[in-house]
Length: 468
Image 1 (tube, rainbow, N blue to C red):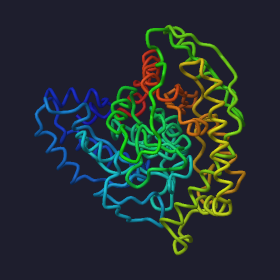
Image 2: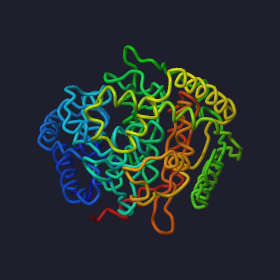
Image 3: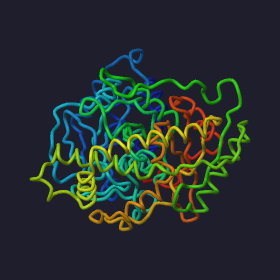
Image 4: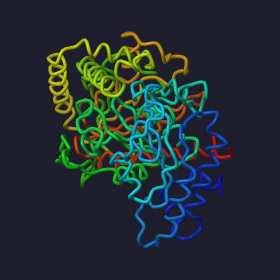
């Protein structure tokens, strides 16, 4: 049974559960079996909540089918950057190792309320501050397609677990691409919703000047949408109100897609450019209107970094304090020190500049329902390519060149999804990104479903990992 359901979607598993062909307990046990056998070589799961999860699964099986929601009985992993009442949250930091928050983040509580079975926590870099997943507490998360390479970050444990068939869906978060980066690296679906769609409460309401949001990762577009629905919705005190898009992609008319492969800085691997072009051709064959255009994404890198540095300084001061600075990784400490050296005026000016440049980007692409870009500019690097302890301004320029198409949309707040774009000749995943108008999360997922139908990727998982 384990091999049969490892790559079943959440939607397929729900049908099996309702028909009584499998139980939630059996599904959870199959996931834990796969975790115990396959994860030690990859490092995706950092806390396994087996006893509690099996109790929850037994209770889920007792609920009548008519009373179950679309994700009832489905296993899920929570990123080790989100607070949980019954598991430690280390934020990938030696300074926070063993920390018990004593509560669930709202997004986590909503997944439990939907009847999902929380299996444990997935790996993340220290405070989610690197686009690769490795830390001094749990070590690196390796890419299942090539263990010498990174799974991406910061939701790298979540994406690697999906590719390896450990769970059908996983919760992640995205402050500069952290759902989309690992999705691209591991060949899965990673969605960054519109700003304000999913709250950070109760630990934070204002977070990274709105750059960061929770988001879903999955192997299918439909599953990503189901997880989004389960987590979405405002809370009292939500600082970023979500307005619905005035036009929804594909609502009674052909979808208009603008294709941009020119990064604001750095260079794009020609194989990734071709993956974008292949996706554009598939969308055109599906009835979309497709045209190439030049979109100016410059001007956002400097304010993005100032916001990142300022918030890192606040996080370190609030959670770690001077006594724990020696436990921090070089990257975190350097970001915090740079943030502390900047003034309140510097921060306010950066936020203002970010908003102004973002408005220009959104205005320049307003005529398109969807903007199609690469997710990342290069294929997943070797793990040692970005050393954990090393942090210089030059290192962050390398990061930003790699993330040239992801972080701008954290600045604008628009919904964006990374989809599998195929494999290179040596078997490395490539991702393509779809970006929609602010508030049109449904439109982005609808066009993503067109891509999935035109260029299906499910068989790649079973061919590579199904017999494991």
